[in-house]
Length: 422
Image 1 (cartoon, one colour):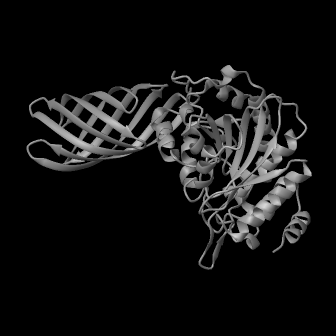
Image 2 (image 1 turned 60 degrees about the horizontal axis):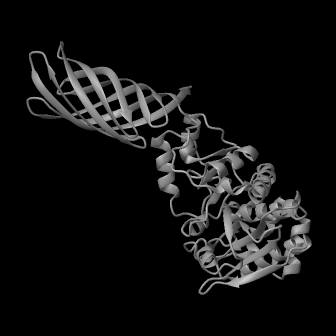
Image 3 (image 1 turned 135 degrees about the vertical axis):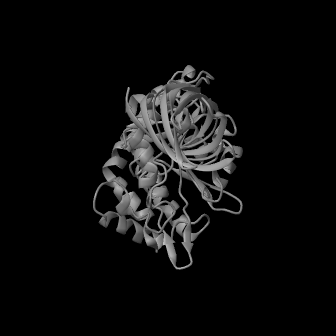
C-alpha cells in the first residue's frame, strides 16, 4: 500500500488525531511493522508526513541489520536536548498471523506525535528531539545504536513511551496487585526515577503516576525485577542519561494478534498526551538541579494496614516427620522499609491441629514471629523466622510444648495481601 493510500485511510478513520495515528499504524496492511520491513518503512513515511505538517523535518539514521531510527528536532534556546521517544516496530507477521501492535507501540508513537503537535510552537530553553526507534522488539537494537551515534551534542534526559493506551496492568492476573493496594488504575506506570526526586516531582505535577518505589518493598521490588532491561529507556540509562519510562504494563493482548486499535482507550491516550507534553516542556525548562541524582530512599506512596490470608504447606518434626497443611491470617502495618503486626496459623498434622498466634516484625522481606502454640491440649512457645518473595514465604519454626518437648517445622506459604487503609 502506498503512502497516499495510508493517509487516505487515516483521514477516513473516525475520531481525533491520536486515534487516527493508532488506526493507521496498526493497519493490517503494514503487517505488524517488523524491524526493517516494508511495513515499518511505510509507518516511517506516515510519521514523517505527520511531522512535516507541524513544520518539523525528519532525518533517518540507518541501523545495521535492522531498520532505521527516525527523528526530528524542535530547537530551543540551548543546544541541550530532551529526547522524547517511542519504538515504531512491532512483531510483524508470524506465519498467517499479523501482530498489529496497537498498544505496543502504535499508542506510544501516537502520543509522541501528539506531544510534537502540542509543543511545536512552544518557547523552550532546552531543545527536544522526537525519536522513533527501530528494532526495540529485537533487544533495543535501534536505541542502543542511537545512543552511540547521537546526532546532537548532549542529551540531558529522555522520556520513553511504550504502551500508553490502556489502563495500568490491563489483565485480571496483574490487576489484582493494584486493586489490593488500592492504587488508582487510571494512573500511568513510571520507571526510572527512583534516584531522581526532581524528575519525579515534575512528573507528579502533570500526571497521575505510580512507580515501583511507591509500593511496599515486597511488591515494588518484584515490579522492578520484571521491568529490568525492558524498552528503549534502558539504552539511555546505560550511558548515564536519566530516563522516564511511561507505560501501562502488560495487557491481556500483549504480543498477541488481538492488540488492535479497538483495545486502545482513546480518551486515556488524549489525556496522557496532554500531561506528558507538559512534563516534556517542564524538563526542557527545568533548572539543572532537577536532574540531580540522589541515593536517599524515596517515600512510599502506598504504605498502610494490610490484611493477609494464605495457605501453608509444611513438614513438621515431632517424634518423626509429618506432612502438614493449613492456613494463616496476618494483620500488619507495612511502612517504607519495615512491617509489624500479628499473625495466626492453624496446621493439621498427624491427626491433630497445631494453632499458633503471636506478634511479628520485619525489615524488607525478612521477618520473625514470636508465637504462643496450642496443640494436643497443651501450650508452648515458638519462634518463626521467615522470608517473603512476592506472595510466597519460606519459613522455619522451632519451639517447645509442655509435656511433649521440642518440635520443628519448615514450610512454604502462599499469601494474598489486601490493603485495608492507612
